[in-house]
Length: 386
Image 1 (cartoon, one colour):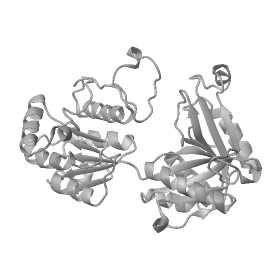
Image 2 (tube, helix red, strand yellow):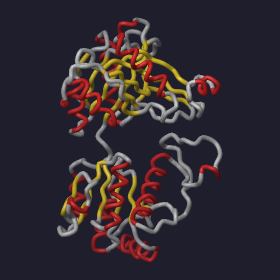
Image 3 (cartoon, rainbow, N blue to C red):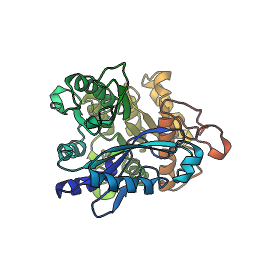
């Protein structure tokens, strides 16, 4: 959804209506995840995608209709392989797409939500996408992380429903997940009839890149491409400049271990954070990795260097008192074995390993594997040896 916000906001501010189609649920090999969105502007232009091209035409026609009628619609595409082929969903996956009109009249909180997302403030939008009473469809709650972040805005139709869905939406927001929840018509937790799509907009995950070298510029570019909020940190001000790292969100001049420790104490690091240590200099690496490997929650910690550098680094870390379990968290030498040599090719190998760790991929050619192409988060396959 982030990639279409500016388009929707421009239409919203102009006092016009956009047709917004959002993937709310997927099955099998659907090409785009829940939360992917496509926008049809009043002039007929299109931004975003719900299927990577497969069913865009059908969603376009539906969005145009919804803009005219003002009535939101939940539509399933790809019920079977044959049906999927008819609408262009040749992968055979199944998509549930909710198409709604978005304007100042239908979604008055939209501008404030964009402000929250731009400021990295967690916010969730809970929207009724199915209900026995058609008047409920399209109603929404805007939910912040807790009461201190502001009151809940909007209503789904009853205090009981609002209370139940607010609690569940905050749980999904804390986990950074978007999904469809099912309730009874009045919000009964064990009932059926009402479906609510909770779109969680947690702050972008962080990528911390240590070492202001040419490889770091390429890694920062890959991180930005993958949607990370990228910080480059180095103790040398002559190298750590914004001009050398134009794709980074921030460039920090500080001793790496000190900066990382401060970020940890400030709760600015979470289970989605990835850390790339590229200095391969013991006076920077060892103190930094002592801090990094003792952080309670980090998605990935990788360190660059030759195998000889790696062995020397591991010995120094053992001397510093790190345990075998702590050292096992380190990916070193960093990256997958793609055979790359240039900074850009190396950055791709690092990005590939980060993706594999996140989704449980094995790092092998898909032509050499069987079963599902896409893994659920938490599934694990063995990564090949570096």
